[in-house]
Amino acid sequence: MSRGDLTPELLHSSSWTDRLVQSAGIPVHDVPLVSVGGGLGSFTLVDVLRIRGVPIPAMRVLSTSDTPWQTWEYLTRVSQLPAHERIRSDAGARPDNVWGFPSYAVQEAWQDGSLKPILQVLAEPLFTDFYSPRAGLVTQTVQREADRIGYWHMLAKGQVRMVRKRLGGGYFTVLTPPPGTSPTKRVVLRSQYVHLAVGYPGLKFLDDLQEFRQAQGERYRVVNAYEPHEHVYDQLRKRPGVVVVRGAGIVASRVLQRLMDDRERYGLHTQIVHLFRTYVAGPHGPSVFMRRKGGDGWAYQAFTMPKSAFGGQLKARFRKATPEQRALISKALAGTTTPKLARWQEQMRRGRQGNWYHPTQAVVDRIERAPDGRLVTHTRSVNAAAMQYVSDFIIDCTGLEADMPEHRVLDDLLRHGGARPNKAGRLSVGQNFEVLGAESEGGVLYASGAATAGNHFLAVDSFLGMQTAALDIAADLTRRGFCKGLGPVRSTAQWLRWAGNRRLA
Image (cartoon, rainbow, N blue to C red; front, side, top):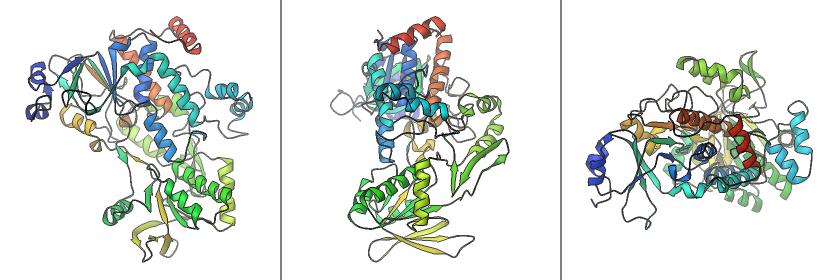
């Protein structure tokens, strides 16, 4: 093993000394705070901390991404939410603007010279659909704020291998820089504070589809909505075909709308078979106080969580609940949902009437390949005979995988960092999003995003959720003397700087 790499002693030690790292020949760089991930979770934290006066040299963001919106933009684009489409987010949920004012609706109205977005917000949800911003507006505003706070000077490119405790306090974060950028294979950042915002470990396939892909080596006809699959739509434009869509959440609704839009735009004859594992026939919920709308197989909800989970009664209730109570509440709120949009509802109605959109509730037994290369989906149902659906493509819209053992850094944290899972199988964190059990003699390891689901805050995997975590972490760091508070005077002054797009020193 060459110098500058991890030694067996380092790999098997849960706590490292400075001498142990130096003896391996790995360069060590000191920085007070390190954020691992480089997505919107990292961005929101360093944005809040810069607003609170933390200088650029005091923070580093470690990431394989070139921009904080790169992964988010990729996932929205491949799941049929390109820049001109609207995402599932509230008008005031702005990653670039911790104050939430002016909202995206106001900014869009200003840019477009139209009052329509503002009127929509005033009329929602009784007289119109909820307003939500275009994906392109989100990336545009985040880029503006990244430039303003000097994000690019804090970014260090590379793959994070692990985070280990340091004897004497703080942490060592091991970074593998891009080839050719460092004389050694590894670089270590020594810090008092570490923040993890690593997102989802990877794609989640349904078991039968995963088995079929592995057995058949199939990557063309069986696709996940979160992976590139534009070839499906290209082929359907060239010749008539059948598509099986599986899933009942926001991504399934977006894929269906894309298929239906193409059918109308290009005069196609695409047949769509939509398989629901759970078919929602109408309003549902455990009580009259916890019910959501539903129908035609779908559970309808404007956002990923009820609005009260972001800053109302449900948020307060969940924060005070025991772990067991949180698990029960989460179970009651579980299930995939999608907004109920008028245009998409009309498309499905026409599809059912025209006999080219076929929604059905069924359990898939297996997938086989037909002699002509197409796919045969074998299903069974309680209320109907077993069926076989022959299709050209299957699109799996069941979501992303968030299991911690699938992520190298999180798995290492469970094995060596003292972290422990909560009732939901994610990182157990405290009220300030500190990872419980991972403390290191005055050093604190924080986490936000999908890896912290099931704790005291429900909507962690959302724009507002990431900002809530960033504000709570910043408040804790303020109490520890790392940054300044954000009282009324400083907050007003900083908002004026933001509004004027004045760069922070």
